[in-house]
Length: 592
Image (cartoon, rainbow, N blue to C red):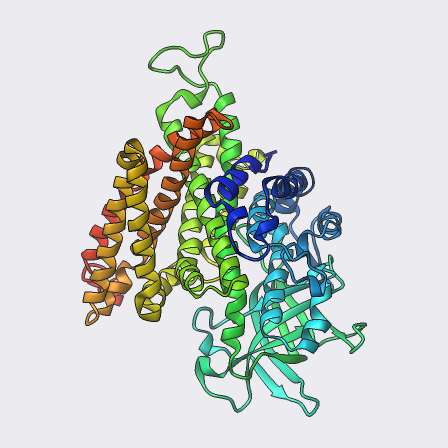
């Protein structure tokens, strides 16, 4: 069975040596010294490896059951969920006014990577709850927050988001779920929602659904969508549970992966719901959940890559096949371990270089969210809004590919369920689809985010990278050659692609056809940026003799691989983008 160990040392390196979180002026960051974060991350790593990870295979093999209207989670899930709650992990970054610990969001990103790597399906239950908590916290009335949030923070009550319907996913303006106003100010919600992760289960007393619906008589299309709090079990004004609401599970989907999570069809048959936020402004409230969830999903893509990679390394060092062409490395054995072979090294280096860069990228995203929320920094808000589709789309695409490479390291054993590698690939696959399929993320990036606020966030990012390259090149000639030059080249290619989109306004298909390549270019540039930052730090640590020299030397070597072997993909993406949409759209629909 696969194993997992939390990468505490690398998380600490990024948080303290690269991002220098203790020196940030963001409220709450002054408490984040190295010892404090080490204690939190160490405990999270222990829970991940000892409590949650052993249930990953159990959840995959048993799945959830649905009998007589009751959804039951796999063996051991409920006990592990209780441990997570009792440790306060479900409310790590939540508002202390409602029982949370009030820690910065960046710590939730760091611990969340480990928890999801240990068991993605399991962690979706508290993960969806956190998103629902955030939406109510941001848009609910004081009474609503007092009523719903305390038990959602503790996950005594869990939460969901209900968007998709059988006939509409991305185009939510087509939804048919209706909300009928009642005299007491509530609404009767009627309709069907599908693909509802954690839609029902046996680990909490109640499930608080956030449901998009159209109020009768409201505007057509997306402008008529409102958001409602619809509990599974009614709650009185004192917070006590009452009768069952008119919401039920129609079925639990059988899926390619995340078998331990209940993906439900939810039926609303005149269920009582309460308006969250303003009428007909549901998308604004829902996007509070969606944007947070998209960074979380990006980190899920990374987390599955991490777990798969760790096991692939163990296998590659143990499996004996063939001899090293440069000389025998295991003279006492019948063959050398496969890690000596260049193609196996290529696959492992691809994974390692992506994982460590993606981790730094994700934690930087968490820092920007804290800066935007806690410091009300408009520049940070614009930047994280720009980067969100990249974090979600690029990290999940590349994370999935990393799990495939890890599976490939195992050869035939990677295809056999006994070894457990296929689960990482199957679980990672959904991350490219839910919370907005990656093609939609790319369209959002090019169609909305790139030009947002007159293009100021994008231009600010380009300028930040340019200034950083100048400073980094002046600090170290070797870093300038191996890291800064590839980053400068890729950044200029990214800007060239952006300008191409601007010049093809009269042919919008050119931008749409190139959006996916642009998202990946953007991802490579962001990873090149953080890799150059990490290389500067590692080089300085080696020169000073401070810390673990082998760790820093490995960091430098891994970064060099990314810059030499992965960054050149930007040139390919630019070539594709500037070829336009003509070949993409050349066939008539009937010719497919």
